[in-house]
Length: 230
Image (cartoon, rainbow, N blue to C red; front, side):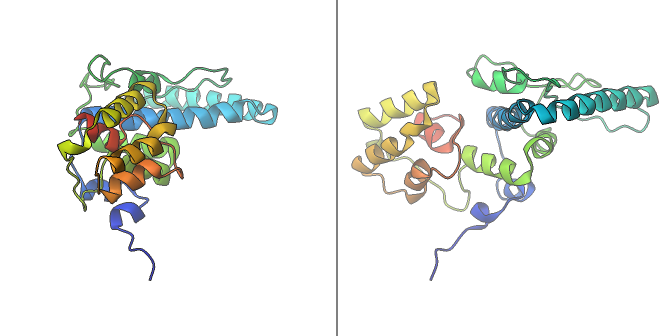
């Protein structure tokens, strides 16, 4: 018999994941969106470096500006006020990163909220505007990748994990702090070895650290759990 795959691991629909774990902090939302913005930026950068795509990208940018002007001319009658997130991608990308991704790189204690709603001036709230942020991420990178990023920053609610203080050896602490600060996630398998040496028996934690099938990011739930971040 094959391994049983949980609904959390199987779903490619962010809304389904949030139904299982509706609580997500503002910090996690910020890091989640920053990772999605960075992925979208990387994809746009790769496209822009292909000479055959430059003309199409410039034409699309003109169309977007035209559509925006027309929408503004219609006014906001009947509009629903909600938090919006804007990641601007120049038609001819030469480097750098979108603002949301840049802000997500800062420490959560110093970085400002990602967005301000242009019509209400409301700041991003981890609960009130969660669905709007998730929708933006889906539009940026698609539902499957957005779901994968959610699983990167949120632990599986079907299997709770608690850190045994005995696991927090000097090696584990130094590795977790170093990975968090440097974003050098290639060290995660080494962290898994250190955790195992310390007596960690959480298959979820060890598997996540050793999983090389997807890109890890700041907000990784294992690192946050070890460092006491939410």
